[in-house]
Image (cartoon, rainbow over all chains, first blue to last red; front, side, top):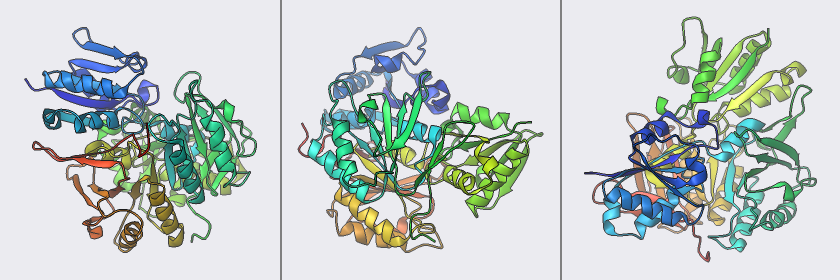
Length: 253
Length: 253
């Protein structure tokens, strides 16, 4: 009996953003493992075993999936967004790297998905139209000093900056410190967008400037986008402004 | 008669990576506009008008889609990958920004998709597990000096670096210059991956180090990934090595 693990990204919310590959792998699984909020978005068949976990240690969840596969189960490990972007895939390979040698030989594969910044960008227009970066503001696994250094260098590089996990109840201060760092480097009129719960019924978008932005607007469901020098707003009478980043940088042909 | 434009990402290749939303919007269109290589991946119904273009000026293609919508057509403008990442969406909003005022009020929306770096990352394991950036190496629209500056700052920030459009027949030299810049900043044993034509029948992955990498291996179908300090290889007997970036940065808890 030969088990496997498929690390599957469910996208930011709606089933219309789940790829057919992910739906097929989910259907083929004998066991489904994941944080309970993600499991609420799948519809298991009666014969599929569902292993719900709290939003606690991702390594524990990854090890559980690998142990089940080692015992012969076909395991779908579900993740929000794209599993490779600040989600479950890195935890799985960390677990393999530091686990028993037999885990290295397991059949493990990742299916890509729509990550939050792509969904937020689509709703706004095309803010990621220039070079960009994605930074996770959680300092649970890296020192804050490194995050500040990355923010400063990314701003100096004139990259569009997508900020994941800008704030939570346990970490309300990082997003304030982030704005302090960015205001030290970038112009006051830099476009800033708060994209909240994109793809969910209560989604919202708020576009402002670096000078006017209120960091406390960000919570754990917010994706924050900081524009580059080429990021512009297009005002409209008939709806929300479009936001895009010009493909032409200053000095370009 | 009220037209619209939907900017749709077909993903990197296989239909299993096209979201249901994109399939639905494609089916609802009266007109399909796109580069002919992307149009070859859709199956229009008999009554849908197809407008194929060469891989030339994206602004011309965008304007064509907007003109059709203004005349009442329901236009699907198809793009590879995610339309917001170095693809058609930015060109559409540039066209709107610099076009007739009426274009601003058109019903224009973008559907997200799987962009090349997410597909390449999924095939490799989880190389985007830490903070990362995406840089387009084409200097058609921005000066090479700016690209070099961004490469240098991204390497100093210890970001994983995804390089889009590393080389083409018209631009064989940029990827060589890129490696010269990166070798001046990053350690020789930095993990480097060439991911070619991911999702296509002839896909391939080559994992090496910054010291050993041969830049001439990159072509227009290659996505290049440059690891960060936390990027590791997991060697296996039963298949290709996994590549992942640890979520824990040096100094993290």
